[in-house]
Length: 226
Image (cartoon, rainbow, N blue to C red):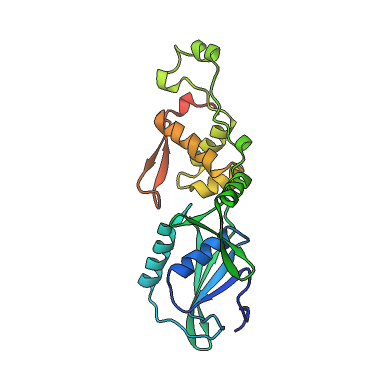
C-alpha cells in the first residue's frame, strides 16, 4: 500500500465507510499524538475503495467539525491505491484537550480507542488549560479614576499583556482564527476566548460574519494601549 501502514496502529486507523467510528478515531488521535484515518480500507487492510465527489467529502468534513468540541482541524486527500480511491483524513494533536465528540472524550491507546473517565478528563483539561496561563488584567481603581476624563466609562479598564497580544494579532490579520491566536500567543483556548469576550462586551472588537469565514473588526483603537 505504498507509504501506508500494513495494519492499524497508534496513529493509523482503517474504516471501510464513513460513519461515527471515523469521527471517534479522529477525536482519539487529536487527544493523543495525532493520526490518520483511511476511509475505504477494511480493518484487515484490504483496499475496498470509495466512490466520492467533492460535495460528499465537504459534507463529511462538516459533519466531523459539527460533532467535535473544540472543533478539530483536518487535512484530507483522495488517494489512488491499487486503482481504487481511498480518502485520507489526518488530524494533529490538539492544543486544547480533551476534544469531545457528541459529549464523549476519547483517547488513542495502541490501536484502540479508549473512553476517558471524569478524572482523566479533568487531568487532560488541566494539562492544556493551566490556571496561571490566563489572566484578564484589569486596572486598579486609582488608575481608572485618573483617566475618567480621557476615556468613556465603557473603556476605563486597562488592557494587559494577554489582551495586547490578541489585539496585535487581530490588527495584523483580521481573518485570524482562535486556533492561530492560541498557537502564536501560547495562551490557552479558554484564556483567549475569555479576553475576546471581554473586549466584545466593551466594544473593542466585534465579529463580522460567521465563525467560519468571518473576520474581526477592531474598534476604539485610540483607547487601547499599543
